Length: 297
Picture 1 (cartoon, rainbow, N blue to C red):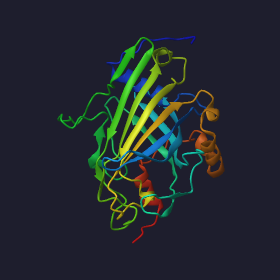
Picture 2 (cartoon, one colour):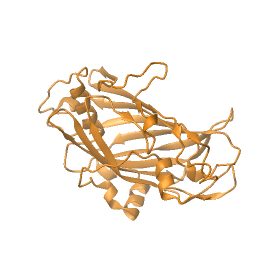
Picture 3 (cartoon, rainbow, N blue to C red):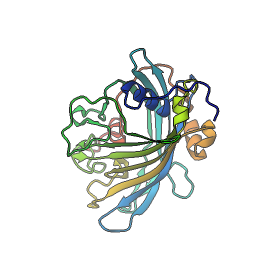
């Protein structure tokens, strides 16, 4: 790769950490830089062999803006779909092998993602649960200070830059057992997401380049999704997902075609950048489901 304006990064400096992360996760360019994820979700029940259930795929577009104080504004949109294991096509219904019920599949669309990255490491909380906020890569055995400098655990090997990113949550279930007895798995949920990210030092340090391409392994653990309607089923298990996650070189041509087709059918604007910098709450599928799906009881 031809580098036109390389300026070294100091990964012990919060300003350079904020800049590098924003450039990797989003783009300073005015046109959309599409990211995508796609893979498979499995049921883990006791000591049984893991059972593949469905695919999990989606997209994201994120624009970023560097401020004079070293902070970065981030603003984006994302989608999430559950897909047929054979065809990769987003499912509208799913035959639940545990309950025998055919359920309506929930699709996730959020056009209000974003916030301001400061020189302090952010605490991430979901929906209406600020007391459950945790720093990235939180270690529960350590006493966590209220503020932490925005220093990420980058590892540099020549041009290869690695970053591990874990968010582990535990908070009150927005899909409550009283209001959604079939959709809720209980009063508390503990979803987690884990990334192993690969990017290029030359791309991060080239100040004329608007974004740095990344590739990542993406895994997640959680209770059953609410749309699976496992509440009261008596099946005590965990969902495990392993996915690819990456920014694209060729835009929608690098996104699985069935995902592009579904977004174009429902709302093509999710493949375009937001026009404003107005953001909303970070929503997981549980928060979004509780807001979109009427209570059952």
